[in-house]
Length: 439
Image 1 (cartoon, rainbow, N blue to C red):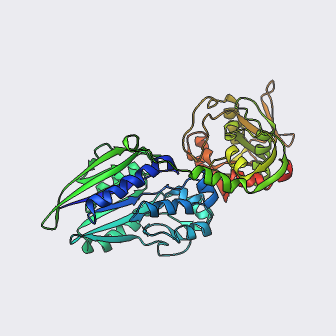
Image 2: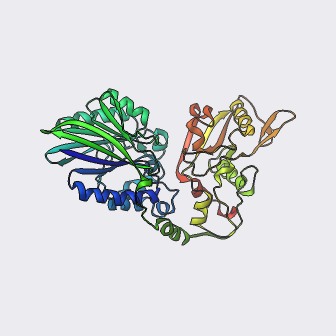
Image 3: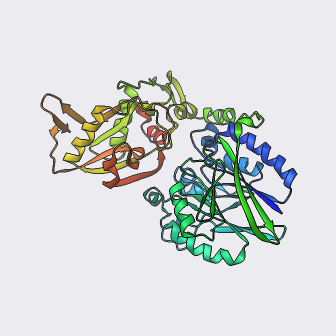
């Protein structure tokens, strides 16, 4: 007896590819009837798509319903780009099981969603368990907790193991944590891996555990085949199916989202917004000011590539602002010594990233562009930095208002160890609306 498990992950609202999968999965339902399952491993939602933005992710849940999803878990895009209440109600209309062993309300000792679910076919009981990535400070800012994922997984594995014939781990923890999971918990038969946007053409085996992953943006759909003899799992294999080889399915979800967002005018006579990657413009200067002011900091820092699309001026709608700032980025206040502040701005002045194409970190543009600052001055001939027209004191504490994407360690490694306050849940475009008189 064979059981098929089809899996998607990190779709990020790439709906042009996902609609192909929906048709494909429905065809497989007719072929395999009850001997198949379809699961999604998180980050299906991405607010960079107008349809997702207009429906705050609920449209993605409708799409998963239509694709006959059996089980889903959440990634960081579901978890930290929505408010707490929005996440609580995201799955209200889901026709599938939503599981996650390590997401809980702050202070709670129980997961908010079911930690696992059991599906049965042909007398075989398959246990699905899930966990999401530990972006702890971001979740705490939204009154959620996700820490200690491995401890919660262990707790519920012990509970699940005697009840089932096969254990499938739906992991939005990332490839390296999944390898650790396989080494630590060999009782897991299959790990469906995600978050780090990797893929395995034929799966990978670690400590006898099969790992399967399907890349990102709907490049692939994964297919796992489990073979049973006399109720025992005797073989398991993984494969990938490229979305490019599937029949194109037309969809108008972008236009639907666009129409919904265009219905709301933010400002009737807004000034034009230029897209300047290599020089400071009015709007990029405004963004740097907004970050400083909103976070009640001493200085602000952003980069010009945040402006993903220009706006010609006039009636500024939700759709127009979404095109300008499609990013899943929040504000953060970082505490630095004067010496550290000078180091950061010296590094920023080198403009080392200005030509780089950036992917991830919440950024949904392309070229990084140049850094732009607010309320910090530099006299090059004297090599002196000033804040509020006063010479920076190297021993004094200062606060910098900037973007959470800078705190992941790649752009400014120093920020990983600095005291930080993430200001959630408003995205960058939401902050701009608070300064509507400046638009």
